[in-house]
Length: 202
Image (tube, rainbow, N blue to C red):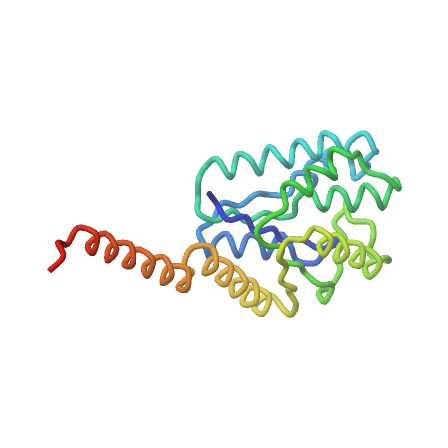
């Protein structure tokens, strides 16, 4: 089973750059943000009814990446973003999308803070509300219950903090010395018990 790492945060916080860097560093599968091309094709105009196709498109990209079987999958956002923006713009979100977001929570969120410049790109429209939007994302990540590492600093510092967080996750997932020690100790006890059972009494 692949380990899923999602880079998240409000708009223009360096998510795409960091996700691409991490994918190269770990030779991981990279899942792009589905909604970006979707929004660009509609000149940045997203209606409430669009969130169903957006969510399905995002999930399809994620599922395809998981099926390719690489040990690590790095995502440039996930359904949590869909939920946050839908609720922000329209005051509600389809229940099935919110439920899917909860059920598909990643192994780790890398939460990018707003300590980098906001850059307009024709789709972003909340440069005047950065702190408010970041607060919504911060609450959503916290409420997800998934592990989270906060990412700050310049590009080099962000990559260093992110790789350290992913390395720690991989250590817990794949190489737990205490668990291995306990398993080996129990195996030795079982062998000793079997040997003692088969030995003839003096």
